[in-house]
Image 1 (cartoon, rainbow over the protein chains, first blue to last red):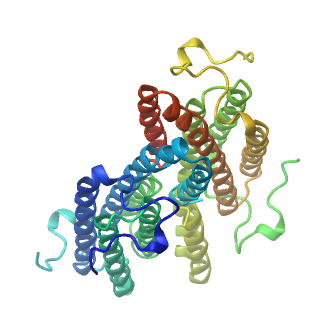
Image 2 (cartoon, each protein chain N blue to C red):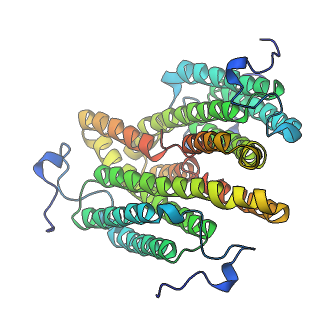
Amino acid sequence: MTSAPASPGHTHGQHTQTPGYAARKADHLARLSKIEGQIRGISRMITDDRYCIDVLTQISAAGRALQEVALGLLDDHVRGCVTEAARADPAQAEERFAEFSDTLRRALRL
Amino acid sequence: MTSAPASPGHTHGQHTQTPGYAARKADHLARLSKIEGQIRGISRMITDDRYCIDVLTQISAAGRALQEVALGLLDDHVRGCVTEAARADPAQAEERFAEFSDTLRRALRL
Amino acid sequence: MTSAPASPGHTHGQHTQTPGYAARKADHLARLSKIEGQIRGISRMITDDRYCIDVLTQISAAGRALQEVALGLLDDHVRGCVTEAARADPAQAEERFAEFSDTLRRALRL
Amino acid sequence: MTSAPASPGHTHGQHTQTPGYAARKADHLARLSKIEGQIRGISRMITDDRYCIDVLTQISAAGRALQEVALGLLDDHVRGCVTEAARADPAQAEERFAEFSDTLRRALRL
């Protein structure tokens, strides 16, 4: 897969190519790379027949790390995209509030 | 990392090398491999400056898939290790109940 | 509502009237009574137009307290009902494992 | 406890007495009143020695309902307080972003 910018079908109104998380991209990528390593480690534990509880402890750690990335992105999104829209464009702000609420619902597993 | 069995420090009483999830190993490994791919896909979305909300949607999906693996392992553990200990050895059963409770606490993020 | 025992429709196999949590009933009831007070306090905060964030902090505390009660009951259930069935009756044990897994799924919000 | 307005110590900058959820107060109060009834029902089930799994099912339902109230308040807060501050006062906006992030962290149980 190439590093193409977001496809036209994902422009979300005025959104073009600077997502809210732009300033923290390297930080999010470093965390995700670490999580990928954690998942690989969990697979190895299962291959090695490690004790269930030890595997579960590592799954909890990886899940928590993934939620930390989600929290960072939610935070970036409110600071960037949501308040930007709120300042500039009431109609777009309404759309942003609605999609933020849906996203929060999924993050809270409702 | 070699496929060494659990180190002596992790034998947990009578536990040797058949974890509760033995019969479903292939299934758990397939799910984890898919999750690893999801995490890589999320990194690629961030590299490509994809919209925050789309990234968050994928993070929720990966987190949910990881919780499904945890649920499967918790289930295997109760069916295998916990009830086995309950049948065979009251002292070990008590230890198993306590560690299961701790693990559940972490899975519920308490 | 009177203190009638579980209706016949809820006997769940051999289950009659000693639930797994019998020994910790007073503890669970005390926690629930405290949570009821927390919910009432949250309503009062909203009536009094208290700041959103302060209300949300109290909701998180009450939600966590409720999960603690769930954790205690899950723990009691595995110690009591699940292992009891595993010792006494393979067919009932299978049913218990399945319903425990469903309950865990809901507790993990999957 | 009397219906005193938020104490001066809780004014949070310019915040006075119109919280972000003002327009949906009746809705939030109705939901909380229903949750209070659910908690009382759960206590009654325990008093009546109802089956653990049935009690846990009701706890999951109450916990989910409480998270729905939290989601509504988070939503109101972003629409109201956060974007208001973002439009009017950069310094206060920064404070609001930080406290929103902390609140989200607690709601996600991190």
